[in-house]
Length: 181
Image (cartoon, rainbow, N blue to C red; front, side, top):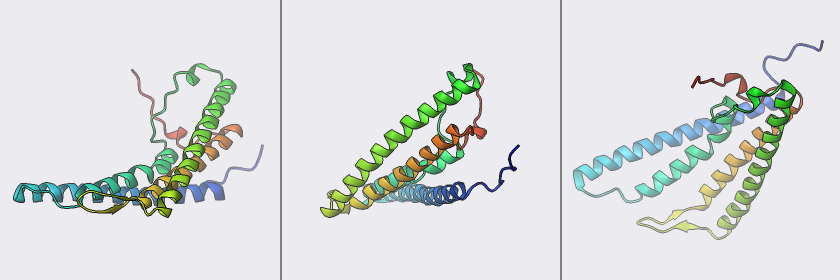
């Protein structure tokens, strides 16, 4: 038997958990901003019958941040929907092969999306891309938020692939809830 596992996890595990938690906190803060902006806009509309200028842009920005910065944290916590109808019926070795294949495809797709997002963010930054509405709003920072969120989520998927290949479980698999239907 090998040495007992470090309960704190490896350096990589701790770094991924800290980075994803930090981005998750920012995502939660963006969700609070979205909520407060919506409440403010509703109150102002009720009183003045007019929206607060720029509120749509603030809401869009907060929504992008809350979604993309929370992806890695949700994955580490096992919060994404998982369907195990196939792997539950397989022997453990075959289930591990299927899981590794799924994580390999997931990692490849996320890497491709991340690459495309970084390319698009760089182009958007070079062009100083803005959104025109009632308020001129910069779009390029949002594109970097998307790229950062996808980059960390890609790293989480890659680490999950490596964990499964080594005979372990992916992040969050130990927290999965089984629904009896």
